[in-house]
Length: 635
View 1 (cartoon, rainbow, N blue to C red):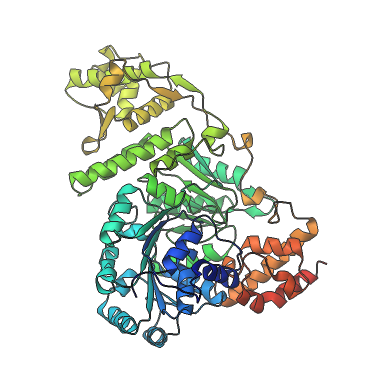
View 2: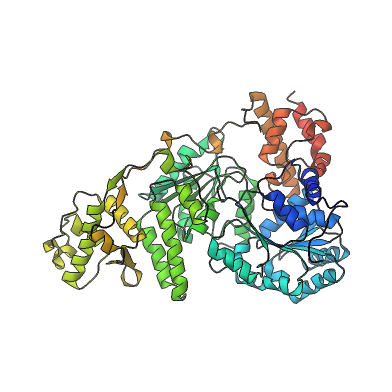
């Protein structure tokens, strides 16, 4: 079974796949590189697919799975790390008329045995399983049985970045998936991820033995997401203002995710938002597993909920109408930032990625790296990844260009990030940077000790404190030479110098500051330092991008009329009832874009439903009459 195979009588692979796309999923054309990927995988080729969240990654293995099953090649096994994701993806496939199932710990022993029997009888097209289950002797024996009969068609390894120690979500059990290559060498494999830098890509290739796989790297750009990073002053108050100004409208609040670093902070922020009238839920690893699951289910199935979470929440969350992702604490690296912000705007509509960060965030992240038990080489890589994120946060030019550049993608200014919309005014802060670096040097020279940021700022600003006089630092030549800058400006300058590796934070000794390698060039006047003029941008200075403030539009971009909006509301209410009956998120039944198209076109017959994106054959048969009934009230 190894090598390229025809899946249609005439060998017209792409035509067969396009037929599946239209018939099953209700779409007339592939997007971006999807056509090349599905043809290659359908013909039996191995592939590594890097495609951003919302880019249609699942179709890149679901369509080949269906096409190959129709050609008699049997079962596709999908490796997926999350129970909730398996449940919703299988539910969506069944809704579309595809025979699919999952095997995970949510099933009883009897239910699992029934699915295994279906699997062996050839009744399933796709089977989802977690990596730890797939590599058990029992499951491998089942796969052996299928393989011997030529009925094992394809392995799809989703969230493939989990195999890499350099990735943002390393899971050791993914390493064991190399058994797929070793034991079933003739069965094609496709590994898929939304986020992977060069190091992570090479790890995926090495540990999954995909050296001969064709690589498909899509653009990492998510043009509908607006990136904003602001100076942290009072993070909680800033978050409230952001949600109220950008994501609250006549229709209520938008759905969003707020990321915090600690469990305690998650609980505090969720409580604060609820007290302020928002509908917020906490999510972190310290909560009971059943409660976490209930909160996740509510987030996926209800509108207008805000999930306040640690990074324990998010992988596999396929909710398309998340209008914002906010970070109250800085992530560890750009991959994590990109993956987390990528959970906004999966429907292609406008969304916000908003973050506040300050000097303490930098110090905390450095400390966590320094205090980890990892080897020095590993720590150095982590520091480099953190530095890249700091550079993004401190950037005064286009943030999207910086973000895409990290993943090796060239771009031009986007016009849809805070720096493009309101370019920051910059001051030459080289002289101030030299004062700060000189102060660090003088303090250590005079005391034989190093000190933290607060004490150094007191010296520079000429504040006579007990600590300053105790060590005689009011006698230093640098005492009071920085009174022209505020504490906020000094902190911003410290952040930038830490990011540029001119200052080193010694987390093992009370976060004291020391001169680092890049300080020399600044002190000698060989390198300039620019500091943005600090003033947080007001939301009123730019157009809102949240759903709560947007007018519903038809697929052609035209605003829906009042009657069409009423029809859309009725369709959403009907969809909600169906979703509850099926225990699925509403978007699994129909995406909002499909309902908007129906409301705009006002179909009167089943034939009128043909060609509406997202309405495959099975859904037309199952729901067509109900859709026409709802629409008929608005003729």
